[in-house]
Image (tube, rainbow, N blue to C red; front, side):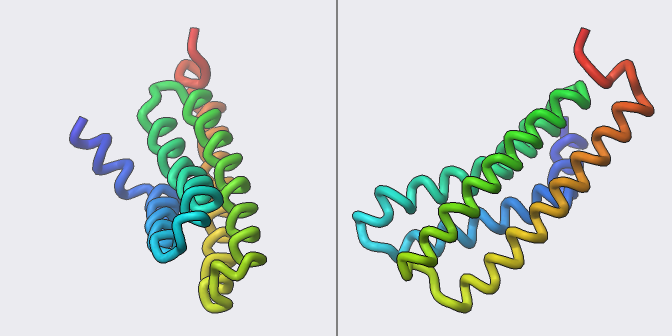
Length: 133
């Protein structure tokens, strides 16, 4: 189990998702109660869900399950990006934060898609771990 944790913690896509979650959390912390309760709670939940789904998939034995959880994580990433854009349009995110977060969302989306492609390649190379029986 120790090696699994070290493997997860070395996974670049997971680290990027963790960093994004912390940045979003710090932004939302400074908002007033109304905005924290609504958009803020949704934004932090969906952003945290990206790393959570990557981790859950990583902990699965079968590549197909890992891939499915990465798909869920990708869905959460797009949900989070939508909430980010809402926060910006409501002037809850500064222009500097917007530029930084926009780049982070784009990078994370690319890395997550690359990771999904890698998992699919592994499914082809290791058909016994490709799908549950």
